Amino acid sequence: MIPLVSDGGTDWDLRVDWRASLAVVGSVLQYLSATLVLPLTVAVIYGRDVVTFALAALCTLLVGLALGRLDDEPEIGNREGFLIVAATWLAVSVVGTVPYLLAAHGIPGLLAPTSPGSALADPVDALFESMSGFTTTGATVLADISFDTHSHAIMLWRQLTQWLGGMGIVVLAVAILPELSVGGAQLMDAEAPGVGIEKLTPRIAETARVLWLVYLAFTVAEILLLYGLHLAGFAPEMGAYNAVAHGLTTLPTGGFSPEADSIAAFSAVVQWVVIPFMVVAGTNFALFWHVVSGEPRRLFADAEFRGYLGIMAVLTAVLTGLLFTGTAPVLDLGGATQGVAENSLRQAAFQVVSIVTTTGYATSDFVQWDTSGQYLLLFAMFVGGSGGSTGGAVKIVRWLVILKVVRRELFTTVHPDAVRPIRLGGTVIDERAIHGITGFTLAYVLIFFVATALVIVDAGRVGESLTLFEGAGGVAATLGNVGPAFGGLGPFGNYAALPATSRLLMVFLMWIGRLEIIPVLVLLTDAYWRS
Image (cartoon, rainbow, N blue to C red; front, side):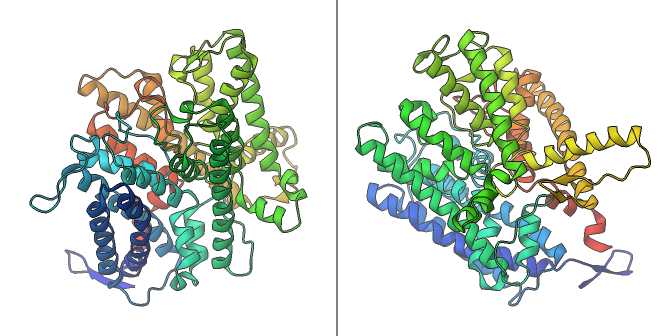
């Protein structure tokens, strides 16, 4: 406890060790500086932005060292866990803007700008892009996604931020920082509140390493497969750089592609190959560990996994019918999908899986679709992936529990004396967990409606034309870490036209959405700090 004195002279105690919390954040930033070596290497290869990333790495390291000096031996409790998680995600997103700003502005007398005229010259836009990257949202303010404007190193940094944020910055920290071996469970619970992370091994640090190992294995598998398609002649556009870039953004359900046309820039074979990897990314990674550990039955025995596949299958079937019959006519880069069975199925499956898993890739400009198809995708934005996955939004497990709660309420209305626990996969769900899930979902919906109203009003304030549907889609896409929305915010559009105040609001939405609201909102309560 740190004693403080109020203005009235009365002693009161701050119940959170903020120095220890910020010291841990500093340790994370020190390790983050090492990851800048990858884009720095690419910068050396292509001869552009070498100094940019060298200075960015140095800046990140110095900030981390300065914060680390606040406490030599930090002790982490439940309260510190919330502060560490929230501050870490905010800090890495702020530090992540440094390469963008240096490339756009340079340093007078020392470093010439390498991306003059870049949209990321605006600090608000740079923060938007960085937060979107680390939270794996995939929403962008870039109208020009090309190597003419941005270097290969800058573009790779966009993808790398998503890969680092996918499995979780804090989960990675627990896996590699020895000082977090004690208190790591609180941190991992704070990063995934309400759903939790299954303890796969006796030590929480080993569990974190297991999750990252599975994550890394699937990433490498996709990179090799995509590049293999290129070598076999099935994907001439998918060179080594693109294979790495898309491997780094599929598994974290990120969606930042170095191609302006996203996955539509590649062949149908590539699109079919990416779909199962998006499905994997939205699956609880603990299930794959059980599969390789000799328990493959646990995968399809899992109620959440079956529900996850089921909802995507139903939505895909409905959307395929709409596209094939022309009810939701669509034109994409390959031509009309109406009446073409394979194309209709592929477009429907890809867009549904991309939105449900919150990956944010696109193979079709669904802004051109009829409202029936667009409303179906808006619904899909609220579904989300599985607990323990890299997907965002509400998540399947919460919807399953809520549906069971509704069913129980209907039953107990008829049988008021009945005691009927909620079960999921044969396991009784604790009532406190049910209350937490209900509270989160209500908060999620309330924030969605309030933020939508604010975005619409803010657009009107500056004379921008933004419909209610477009505003709702933009809020759902950022709060749920989905990425593309509708109208000008669609898959081949960007968020740059929104007022700066709306973009800052969406930065906040991406932040709290990635942390599932509670770890951030709890910091705003007096009870957290002093009770």
